[in-house]
Amino acid sequence: MSITRRTVLLGATASAALLPLAARAQAKEVVIGVIYPLSGASAQIGVDAQRAFETAADIINNKYDFDLPLARDEGLPGLGGAKVRLVFADHQADPQKGRAEAERLITQEKVCAIIGTYQSAVAVTVSQICERYQIPFLSADNSSPSLHRRGLKFYFRAAPHDEMFSKAMFDFFDALKKKGQKIETLSLFHEDTIFGTDSANAQLALAKERGYKVVADIKYRANSPSLTAEVQQLKAANADVLMPSSYTTDGILLVKTMAELGYKPHAIVAQDAGFSEKALYDAVGDKLEGVISRGSFSLDLAKKRPMVGAVNEMFKKRSGKDFNDYSSRQFMGLIVMADAINRAKSTDGEKIRQALVATDMPGDHTIMPWKRVKFDDKGQNNDADPVLLQYVNKNFVTIFPEQAAVAEAIWPMNK
Image (cartoon, rainbow, N blue to C red):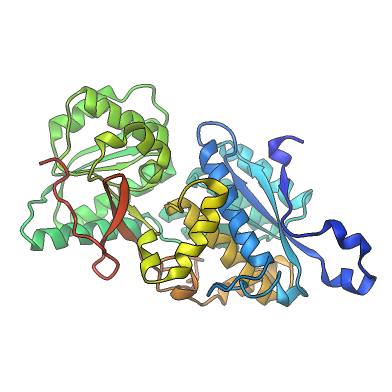
């Protein structure tokens, strides 16, 4: 069986044939499609995503003493204890493969919902297929702001988007300025996909609104073999803050090229993506002491909410690593979707959509530092409060906002 056809069955269904007919009627399964890059340059993201979704499915399908929806029941009580079965599909970071895989999941695997996709460009095509078939799509970790503004009725996103993340960055800059730090100029560095373009547009608008001068706005081709010319421009601009929006391989090349050309930014505040990935810090972490990235998740929250640490340990046993900004959002994506299916008491797409619309999940019933999960009329949760994290001594610590912070920001990163 190829990896694109690979299914992961969580829950004991093998013994179902031995059960009496009445019990079997209660032991049906709910099939949810999960679409990620499982091969190619972003394959590690897909592998980590699988572990995050498996962790969530384990909590849904079995009993755990957590303040999470469905944790204290076995399966979905609204559907007679039905277990969640995940079917994974590989979009290989290709929007057209994503489109085809979404259609296969719906027509052949008979999924009742789809979750994805890491790359925002793939979320565009996958969500369009879901809309056509009236199957709910939950954008677990896509951050492009334009995704929820296309008039789709079956599109939902529980996590923040890049306008929300960028606003947190500028709130942070304003707070530092009030404390006497000099922050006047910014350099934007972003790839040419929907993720990079939307991120830069949000940052340009906020810079204008808040009175910061953008001295370089550099768009580069994703997966470029060289970034020498672009880094020379960044070095010449010498802004107070460098703001990259890059996936992992480009982020590694950016940092290596900066080192080769002797460019040490005063500060880097990144739009997550590659700058939240372990692979980037394994490769160039020695050059990134003090880098700041936005995020949705903070493991520091475990100090206030022990459940976060316990769930993280479950994920760590599967993956060998802690939750990060992506895997935490992926985990919550399945929890939010399963909660809606349970309340819908149905696998019908329209009924699940209505249940998602009615979602109102308190923040302390998630593993995130969010106020709550509640979708607006476009399917966006506006109560998903971002955090800023700083890489210090090989760990990320939360430095902003004040109510979530466990440490003061080190600024600038290169003194």
